[in-house]
Every structure is written in structure tokens, then in C-alpha cells.
Image 1: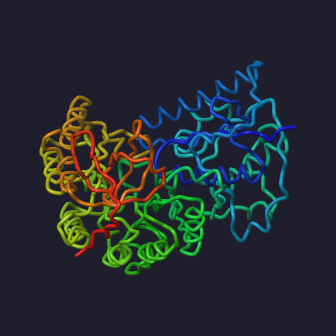
Image 2: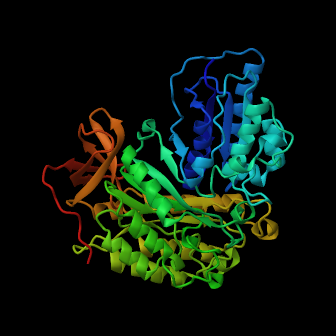
Image 3: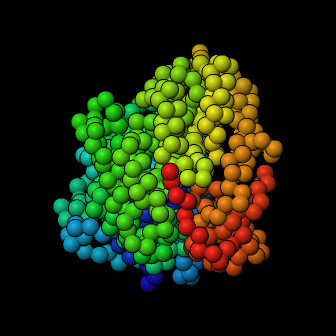
Amino acid sequence: MRSMRYRITTLGCRVNHAETRELESVLLARGFVGAAKGAHADLEVIHSCSVTGSAAAKSRQAIRRAARRAQSVDLGGHLDTGLSLDRNDHESLHVTDQARQRRCPPIAPSFSKSPQIIVTGCYGSTNPDEAALLAGGRDHVIQHESDDGTTLAERFALRVDQWLTTQQAPRSLRTPAPASCRQTIRSLPVVTPRPAAGSHVRAELKIQDGCDAHCTFCIIPRIRRTLRSKSIRDAVAEATMLVDLGHREIVLTGIFIGAYGHETALRRKQRRAGTTPLADLLDAVAQVPGLSRLRVSSMEPGDVSEPLLDAMITNQHVVVPHLHLPLQSGSDAVLRCMNRQYRIGDYLEMVDTVNAALTTADGLPPAITTDIICGFPGETVDDFERTVAVALRIGYLHMHVFPYSARRGTAAARWRDRFVPPTVIRSRVRRLIELESDPDNGLSIRYRRRLLGRTVRVIIEQPARPGIMTGRCDHYALLSLETDRPRGAVLTAQVTSVTPDETTACPTDISAPLPILV
């Protein structure tokens, strides 16, 4: 009798990928093994996304594919019984915390003829009826929030235990679990990776969840309204385990990183305003032995404080000079309609502060990447031109450019009389993409040219073509190197060539010091 197999399909942001580890830890603790690519899985989990219309469509397609696979098995399709393991590029982890001592007795799951589908993530929360229809019923959908305050991982564990016990979908997810079981996973659990999980150079460490800022274009506060933060002690413990596994780089991620350690994302209401929980966390994780690189994900002007920059400078041997600072729009009028907590003056002042703090002694500024929405309701030609002007002033290494996507349940989706024509939105998206990627004078090549001749630190990530490996330097540029060094190797290299499509570097045997900040 073989163990049950699972497959998790993850769509969306870094937070979703970090949450996949939490869901996977539930399954591994119950004796599941990952299904090989193309093989039968007894349990299909779709960790979905709905932040844009495109993401929602991809989530629906993923659920349909899982349903087709399940149907083919029910109709007598091929059932592979091999035990080769391919976890679909997700990392296997176990839950470990103080509550582990109270874990339910282990269940030894065996083969089930009827594959199960469970939909989690944002699409299951924003479109529960549609997700239920595709997945086979309401009991197959676990929404992110719950009236009883339990977390997604806790309710996922309950759902899996009910299925393993009954071998059929339970009538309701509200069936109370035994007290010992309900303590298995905390809101943001510490997880212990399995040895097979270290094939990825980079690992996301989820330190925060939830948002109540209510930007008018964003659905997240409806489906992740409860704010939670991982303690510094637990974050350090998880980072240590990830490094021990072989991960070279850790990315601190969350729904609203600036709300780490706070009960709200609204800065005017933060009772602990003036404290430095994020800076303290960064400083603590940077001390983890063996960690080569630490990166922080998206932050807004109010999040980038002097203590945070001090922590980045103090730990510059690990914390990299790269920040992702979402702009969304360069127009104050649009930012006001978006209900953002900053205006362009605040944003530009923040960037100037970041540049002053993190520019190297020989003049290399930090890498800044961003998010921009084109065609927000009411966006005029002048509004868009202001966005272009801000992008040119800052000189982003990369811009994630999104066409506005109306999300049902958001304030902006009701402003239909102000919608920008799709053809206009597409033209604005193209213009920003061309602004970045122009082969002669685009923002990307402008920044990458500043790396020419410099010796940089590179972490090898993957092969590009025979004899050529790629890896990112601390300033986030992707480099191509002629080397036989394996994935995860940390080396110094001199940047020798910059073209529109590639930045080339030559590994050097000289142990060059890292760039020194002013």
C-alpha cells in the first residue's frame, strides 16, 4: 500500500509561494509524497491568485486542468504507481513550533481511488462560487479568512484530516477539530525544510500577512483582512533552517511589509508608530550564519525609515542594495483616487534618501524596481505623462507594468464611467515597456551600463545554454557567465559587456571586496 501523493499548483506572488510551503508542510506531516510530473496525484491543491483578471483566468484554467486529471482517473484512466518525486518546483517543508509536541497522531494515508481537489488562495476567496463549481463543490474551496479567526493553514489541515478520515468531502469546514489538532499550526508557522528542498538558490520567508489599507484597485483587504506578523525569533529560526538546507538568498516577503509588527497597515493608526520592528527583524536575520544574501520585497515611502536604512548599511555584507518600491502612478490626482498613503513628493523624497544612503563610494546607486498601473479609471494623458517623467527621473532597473484590471468588490470597479479605453491602456503599457527596454537608451540598459568594468558578487542560479550559467549580482541585474560552477555557487566576476538582451561577466579568481557604501 503506497503513500498518497499530492500536487500543488501555485499562481501569483512571492507570498503565495511562501504559503505553499505551509500547505505542503501539512501534507508532509501526514505522510504524503509529491507526485511526479505527469503522474497521478490523489490530492490536487490549487493555490490561486486573482489580483488581476489575467491571474484569475489562469487560476480557473489550473482548476479545470486538475478537474480533468481527476475525471480521467474516475473514468478508469492511467494510474501511475511509481514513486519518483518531482514536487513541481515547490519546496518540501515540515511544520515545527512549540505546538509540534501537541500534534495529532500521525495518519498513514493510502491510495484513494477518487482524487480530491482543494482550491486555496485569493481566487477561492474572491470567487468562491465559481471556484466551487469548477472544483466540485463548496467543500473543495478554503477561503483565506474565517469568522473563527483560524488561519488558512489551520483550516487546510482540518480539511485534509477530515478527508483522510472519511475518504470523502466533509459537509462543512466548520466542523470543530480536536483541541490538540487545532494547535498544530500557528498563524505564521516556522517550517523545517526537507533535504530535497534545497535545489533553489532563493527562498521566500513570509514575515507578514494581511492588509487593511484599502487601495481602491485592490481586492486583498477583502480576503486578507487580518494582519499577522512572524516573531523575530521564529523568522530567525526559519531562516537558519533554510540556510542549512542550502539556500543562498532569502527574500523577506509579506502582503504589506511595512505593517510588520503592527496591528494595521494604516500608518496614522499605528499605535507603535516610531518603533522599528522591520529594521530589528532585518538586523536579526542578517546575522544568520552562512546566509549569503538577504533581500526585502515591496515597500512604500512610509516604510523606508532611517533605522531600516541603517540596518541595511550595517549589514551590507548580506543585505543587498536593491529595493522594490511600487509607484503605481506618477500623478498625485491618481494616487489620491487610488487611496495610496503617499504623494509623489513623498515618493521622490524617499528615493533620494535611499540613493544617498545606499550609493557606493564610487558612485553606483542602488537598484530600484517598481510596479506601475496603466489606465486606472480617470487617468488622463497628463497623468500618464507624469508617470513617464517620474520613471525617467528615477531610472528604474525594471518596471512591472500592469494594465488596470477591474476587480469586483473594489471601489474603482464601480467607476465605469471613468474607465480608460482598452486601446489607450495597451498603448500606455507598450510605451512604458519600451521606455525600459529600448536597446539604445532604455532605463534597463542605462542602469546596467553603470556596472561595466565593476567587480560584483554573483550567486549562480541556472544554466542558460551549454557552458553558460546565469546568476544575479547584488544590484539585481541578471548576468551571464562562462563557468562550470554549480547552482548556488557564490563568486566574484567582472562585468565585461552589456547588450540590450544580456549582461556578461567574467569570473575572477581575485577575491575582491564588496562595494563600500558612502
